[in-house]
Length: 198
Image (cartoon, rainbow, N blue to C red; front, side):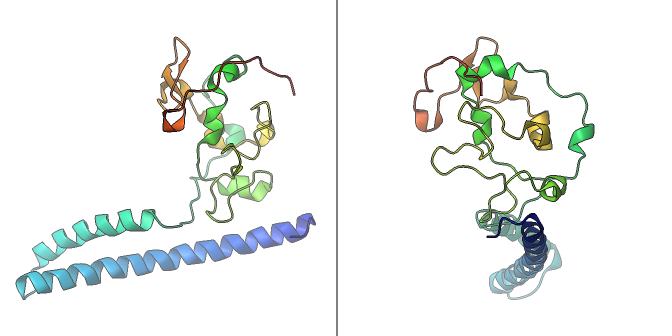
């Protein structure tokens, strides 16, 4: 891909249009599929169409189909919010906690907002638009530095600004006593170490 910012912006705008149109089509097909499958099941089960039963079956099949489609690739965009005007953000001393938690919140996955996309700073997964991009080798956000600090701190997404790890059991078993949660697959968390200044 060209490194020219204008070309990149055009490409990303085009991809966004394609993704939005694809999701609209997917939604229409989903709704049609739910109705047809519910009607077919009802006709087979009763030999007639009973509207009350049809509605119940439709809702049950909708839940089944939603679970199935959620396992497939989808386009995700976070609700619009001006990240630069957010207030009441959690006051957490991340710098003192990094040696213990290893910045594991930077391994969480979440969708970006259109504000993030328009800025063109925060990278997203092309295979799963528009989720924050992670490095394959360690699972951390591509903007996480080798010292687990944020390389795009001024432009970080709204969810990063508002995220409060203190009650998140994926991060802390006991925040007050600084006991981190077990690492994924019940591996022990890496040993605490000193913070390195970038």
